[in-house]
Image 1 (spheres, rainbow, N blue to C red):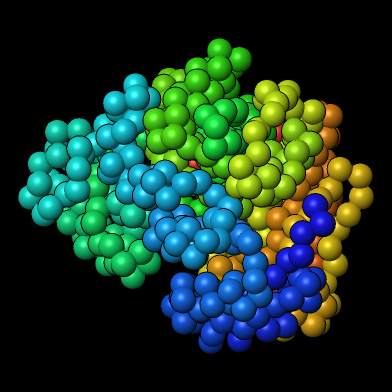
Image 2 (image 1 turned 45 degrees about the horizontal axis):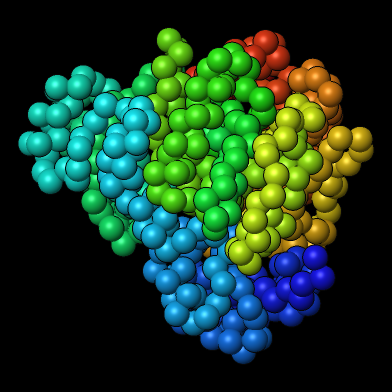
Length: 425
């Protein structure tokens, strides 16, 4: 687009790839996120020093912070994302849930507001039935979330989830929803401009997760019939309209075994897995974000997807040790390529994997004219993916997508457990 790029980094990321590829990079503090990537004054100061016009918040840290977006606006910096008001509404899961009810979007049975104490939680859980899901009102990324199967585990989950939410979001408020056993996680990509135009760019299946965080994503989902896809698309657009949404965002649903779907949340940012949609629809979503943030009209209707696409996330984690993150110096690495393969990564030989941040190393994306072709390409690429000195999830993902159950499209939240059993390998 001919736009000069300025990145920021902590001292721990001084040698990271983005600092080398950008036109300019500015250090904003020490390794701890609270002293760097979450420190708004340092980011604004860097923006003013570099004399930039806009800030893209990425998909972590301050990406969904209404406060950060408001400060950008006050500083006359364009925030490449939704409005402050939409961010505030989507960040408050309880208020967002109420908004969806008013808009006629189906929601999971649960509390109508914040849970004030354990007695109220136990009474509600008894009414809607166990198991229940304890969730952070300001949550995201699987943090502040716990499943409870009885009153005893519920009381413990309330305490743990509230503490985790306080540490992650500085807000310990929680609410409760019915846990949909066996539910599939289906999300819809939204794009909207500042003039009221909205489109939906299909769905992504994100059911295979560890610790409530995604591992494998796919479009189109094998769970949806044309009629169900149309109904969920309409619900996703209704959810976005209910909060006057603009820019890129994702409406997430749970789909139960009977074909009923329920709104989970609206993620007011670009998603980690956005390359799945980009490859399927041949669109650059980040380019669209920049264009829409500048006030341009969307200018087109939703196109039809051109490819079947599957993405696997490669984390610096050991699946045999409950996905324990690991760090270390990568002396050698091989990033796969070939027809239909895209790899988004910051890896290079000599890179030191830090322990301060998220353990994601790479996203390996495969597209094909058919689902089978996408699976074959992804399996080959994952088996070729190599880094030394650091254990990753690449081979686990290769086993999953190569397995007969995945090939048949029989995807569920229990699928991962089958491949963590050493006897099944």
